[in-house]
Picture 1 (cartoon, rainbow, N blue to C red):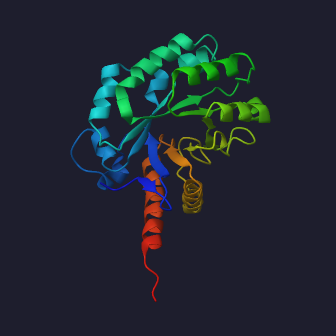
Picture 2: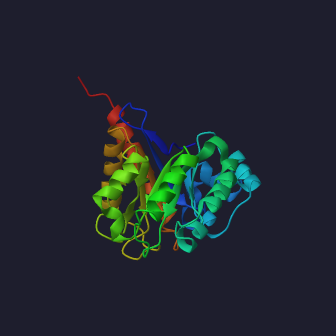
Picture 3: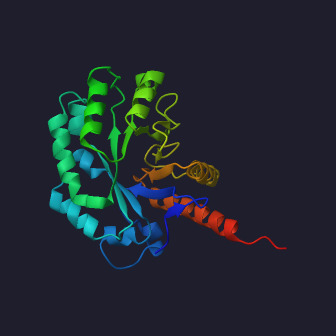
Length: 264
């Protein structure tokens, strides 16, 4: 199985590469095994995925458990919080819904990765509601949490300090919806990049120069001890898989070059 969790610089830090969802587009079908379910085929090529369908509807514990059972041991699932929490309740009085969601994703067991809070662009940071939700989330979940805010109020220094205190990483998003959103923030122990496609969001593939820079940035972050996740969300025209494969190849080529002994 090609490795997409990359150990970098002899450290324990890893770079996890994947896409939002596990579709296997025809244009890249030759890069995946021919047999198995879409998830089984995907998991033979990538070691990480982001489950976006959880945003739209709940999944049973058994469904998550079945997904976990169909992938290799090192595979990890990031899961996006339901819109009932983020967009309908807008983080207000949402603890019951959050506990329900956490009970469902528990079906993934040790294969559960980061939980993603993607917020609506209109949601301002509120010192009571927003901070209260984040504190409650951290109190009841000890695993990785990442937050993708899209309102400028979330990029104030005191919000970044709160995220750091709670060990919640802020997503680095492309394209950046507001100034600062393209850079990681909050807790530095985890870097989570979400690439939505540019110039046409959700559709455009990234040019080689952008993928070169991304691979270099991921290597640099990992060398400094950060766990790095890189998720391509430009899935509408099936560009995500190709971009993810290209970044994996860049990281793999660099690793081989680094291991080549220097001639005497």
